[in-house]
Structures are given as C-alpha cells and as structure tokens.
Image (cartoon, rainbow, N blue to C red):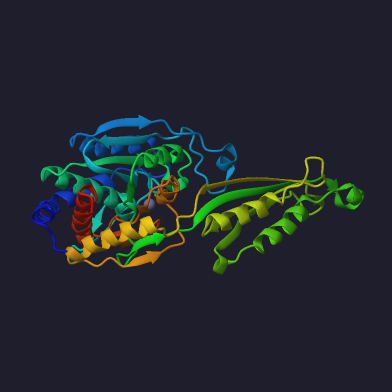
Length: 401
Ligand SMILES: [Zn+2]
C-alpha cells in the first residue's frame, strides 16, 4: 500500500515544522519535571493540554489516588506527598476511539546540572533530561494530532497525561484503565528501542516487602530468650529467590535488606524489599502465591508479614496487538522507514492500559538512548519521522484500516 494523497499531505505538514518542533522540545526539556516537582509538572501539563485544547479537545484533570502507604517507605520511593493529577483530553471525531498516553514526569533531579537540551555537533543528536523519555514522545504525538487536524482529519481520541509513571503509576493507574476501557486501541509514546524497534511484549512487575518481628535479647546474658528476625528474613529471601526462572518467565530480585542494631543484640526487626517480574498472568499468580506463603500467622514467633503490590500486569503479544503492530509496520514501510519488533524487560503504562482490555503498542516515541542517565539522548530526525508515522497510523485507524 502506498501513501494516499491525504497521507502525503500529513507527511509534508509534519516535515514543514521540523525547526519549530526542535524549539518546542528544547522548551519542554528545560522544564524540570523529575522527582515529583509539582511546579514543573503543572507548567508542562498546562503547555501540552493547551496544545490539545487548541485542537478542540475537552480537558479535565482527574485527581490522583494515594499510593499504598508502605510503598512510601520503600528504599526507592520519592515519597510524594500529594498524588499528582492525570490530565484527560477528549476529542470527538470519526472511527474507533484511539487512546494516546504519555507521562510528564522524568527521573531526573529537578535541581541537578542536567537541566537542558544540548544539541551535539552535527545536529543529529541532542542530550537532555526527558528528551527521549518521554518529552520527545509526547511531542511526536502532539505534532501528529496537529497535522491530522490541519489536514481536516478528525479521529476520535483521548489523550491521557499522567505524572507518576516513573514511580509506578500508582496514582494514575485507575484513571488510565478507566480511559482505556472506553477506547478501542492504545498508543503510548515511550521511546523506541535504540534501533527503532517497536516493543510488542513486556513482562509485568510488582513490588513486595517482607518484614520479620522477633524478640531482642543481649547475646551474652540472655541469648536463649531472643528470637532472631534476620534469620527469619534470610531463610525466606533464599526461598523466594529460588522461584526465579527467567526461562519460565519468572524473575524475583530481593534488592534491599535491613535489620538489626548491633552484633551483640539478637535482632528484633528485619525487612527485605523485592521486585518481581512475570511474563504472563499465570506466572504472576505463581509468584504472588509464593510470596504470600512466606507470611506466618499473627501469633507466630518470629512473625513474618508480607505486603505486595503487583500493579503492572504482564503485557503479552495478543492477536489484537499483532494486528495493531502490523498496521504500524505497514505505515512505517510506506513512509520508507522500517519498524522491527522487539521485547524488553521493562514495564510502562501500556501494561496497565492493555490490562483494561484494549490492544496497545507503547514505543511509538522517538529513537534515543541513555534513558534514566545524564547521557539521555534523542536522535533528532526521529521527531519528524515518528510524528509522520503516528499521523499516518492514526489516519488509517480512524478510517477503519
Ligand atoms: Zn518513560
């Protein structure tokens, strides 16, 4: 299939704005949106929703849900106090409703020195916080919608913009699933794999903590009266770690252990924090059951409690995902681009959206790399290329392709 006249027009409309898009990106990257920086998130959200409301979208802010309390004690929590809202922008139009999704937050320290877009010699690459993950991606989506609008194409779409993806989307999960349930397909603009690949399969992910409560005692004077909480945690860490079997789609990593106060005191408290990844609902159930089984009764001594939150379900390849990915690949090929398919061990909001029952492809953003480091870069030509791809794909989706 070749590009239609209308699609050629979309391609031209995006290409004509290359300089403008690079300027947008520089402005967006300079707004600090890492680490729950509310002021920056609010400012950036306003800019993006402003662009979408100019296309006729109705914008509403959905309040964020509170994260489970115990996750705020997690060693890798940023302990956000106020859950950030999710912006939901709804445009009426033709064809099946398309959900677009992007996260405004980055992982970068808002007060750190990595704070702006720097174009590298040659002009093909630029470094900047969130340049690829995923301010570049959000810009790709916005530019595609703007091109469609300018060409008079009116797909029905809902664009959800959350602010807590990098910390697990606990505050926005409910809204994302609600929006997804009212749409037919989902497009997420996370960065592509470095070679431009589209991720078509992801594992799910969950957090857990084991806490052991024993009895303190002086080792020299009263050893027998003590009950060692570290021992209780240690045996369970070994037990749960043995469930890891990457080939069977199960990963378990206990990454942080805490416990005890001094070598001559029997430790009363100990805890272990872990992350589980699973390739299917079945693997998720197996790991969840194994983790839950580590708990003791409330009267036991030592007592062990388990808390877990498996908030990102596995995102397997389904017939719907395959169809959507093939549609994207054909659009890419018609544009003279290639779109290989790939897998990753990472998770994103596409997991949660697909769990709500719609097929989702989630790496339609820019090409780049060095994600989550101060080397994060974007391949600048991919801004235009990916916006062209998104525009043609949405046009085909809306016309029933
Ligand atoms: Zn991301």
